[in-house]
Image (cartoon, rainbow, N blue to C red; front, side, top):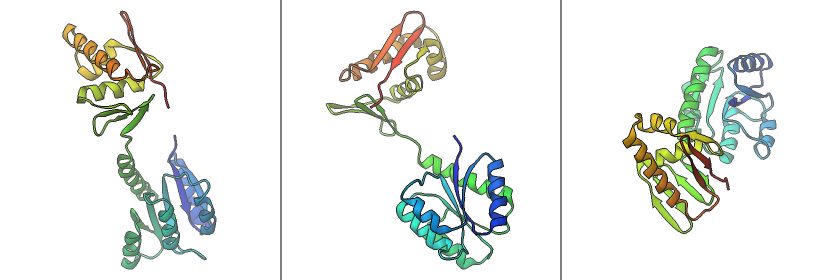
Length: 228
């Protein structure tokens, strides 16, 4: 899935160049020349991963627009563009909550690098740590399997195995693949260890009969985790 970029730049020539360059880098770009149009989108279809805002714009400047965006989307990453390389602009942007700042005319390669660095930090911070499995919630950060009737503390290996099985939901997974990827060895003893862990997981999921980890003799397991 492509990263969606909000680009707000009133200069038609520069805006078009930026849009085309970003699209060549496989980003999906929504370009707005009028910042007032962005305000209307904020409450309807604001599904972007990062914003690039020009500072000097008519009616609503980049700083004012940024404040509006961050009020509605506090964690939304922003990068400011400006023709002025002044310290006051950089400080103002950082105080508002900007992630970065670059002066125009900018080197497109430097802009791409800055965008990717921001996204890298943002994606890490938004890493998924909770998964719904039927009537259960798997919290991978706290190593908990949570059900309304009980909370189960998982071992690191149980947590890793559950995450691995989730990748193959509604599919068949080979025993050898699990052993090679998680235990990094495949012999009689690790095979028995895997069987013990599978038995534990089945017991943990006893409160939801729709959850199934079915053994297939000589093959592996068939996984069926209903989404809620």
